[in-house]
Length: 503
Image (cartoon, rainbow, N blue to C red):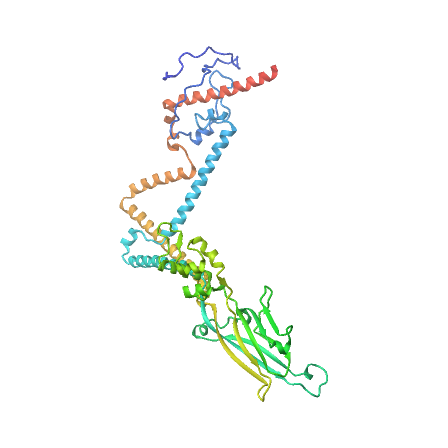
């Protein structure tokens, strides 16, 4: 074999062979050969891999130099047989991470592709000028989607704020007199009595008439937090002149309230109704109410009105912006000359009181010719949820239109994909018609490259099929390295066996 740089010229003396009857085999130096870079793209062909080793001239069939089984697929792979399990596990982990990275990249590419799936390529637009109308519709659709998304966000923000509208609640207070029956000796009918009923309903308006009629009407008791009927204390005594109702968590809603008492004289009564404000409202201190022009409102509205007053009168400190310099009116109310913004909610707490109840004075008439039944009507303002809020919520929760749009989008994607496939087929056939020979050659090269990519083939199998491929300078060194690795492996096995026997 020709000499090579860095190749040992004077090998060590021959060592005793394991097959002394055969011709002595050329010895390899015990030290390892200098590591040279692996030739890129090298891998033996499958035919070469399946070749079985044959005994060399002068060696018996049992010589250790004869390769057992097929040749190793790589000339340097014998060096990697001593790889530790930890190193092998690290390599496996690295391969798994690379595979996961490729999968994630493919998923991201798929999602990004969805956005541009409906766009026709410039080549298709040049071939079909009428496709420009489709591109104009696509541009309009993007603008429409952007507008709808912005409106949906606006609706979501609007739903976070209370949306109320004022409605008229008509309250009916009626009393019915039941005179005593002289022919009945015992029972309730033997004593004259009266019955008081408090009922009500919302008055219809234009917006309520256009609302959904299938929706059940709101119960009368849902408008109030408590109801108190105060009768004449002189007639019914201090223990029986109050009739109270208060809302609890287990309260059953009702359409009205009914009170029945014995008596045949006219009775003065006072009906106190405490509205159930949602969100909760508060009555302001009279001085603060006159200053802000707000009588009863929610806490955020009161704080906002106070902030508007501070900005209008420029009471914010110019140097320390978190402080407020109170004017003479705020000093009288808050009893301080200077306070922080963060102190406003705490100082307002003492100035907020429960709202005043609605007071209705009514006379229960049981005397006179028309005292059988009398009814009085009273209209009060109440706040109810805006019907627009329900429509906005239904719009956000509706999925029927989204499903229909998604179905149409899928059809558009399939159509565009078909168009792109037809364009590819057209270009394929045009290239073949222009120069069949050149097209076939380029196509075979492309198919070979794709086949190598799909099958993970390393090297060039076509070159490896020829014998000249193995007469290159690196082939001899590769064979020497292979046999040297086999000899070293066998030597280690024998040394271990001899060491065990000696022990």
